[in-house]
Length: 249
Image: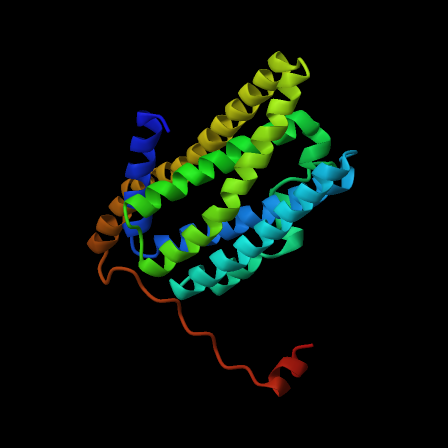
């Protein structure tokens, strides 16, 4: 792990795990990501032409489903929102947010080599990320035990995907593998930037709307105070019986 990446993960983890309510939200997002990854792996098992990889993809999918359940359990223990946690295991919502675009799975869009590059980069990043959490002892011993159990599977995912990429290299496709890794890393950074921009935009827009509300409506409160009696409640409506209403028809 590079020094810069470890520093960024350390700062982000200190914030994400210590703010009130964030640990449950954070772990719920892990459950959502693991569920999405499981669907991607099942699609890869369906479309790959290699029998040996089909078995690895299927075992990987089972691991991801198990991880989603483990993270969901921890999210509930940390006081997570039940509706949001339930949505993390909702297939229809997962398909809408991840993986399948215009009826095509990630494997179909990327092809086998780039898909394996994505698996290797994503799983290696997860191993590094979880390692920082354990090193910083965040957030509690029960979550530590969950992360350690999941890390055993993640190391297998890193290992088999790296072996497959090395197989492509031995076949003389070194440039293609490096290009696939570049594209995956670029797209992951772009996706992270877009997610940050969206969250930052929500915060900034809320701030500006609050300032606009205070600047535009605040003076009217002062003007209303100058009028004798200030704001007046609306006049009560006269009572109207059913018989009276029928007589007006």
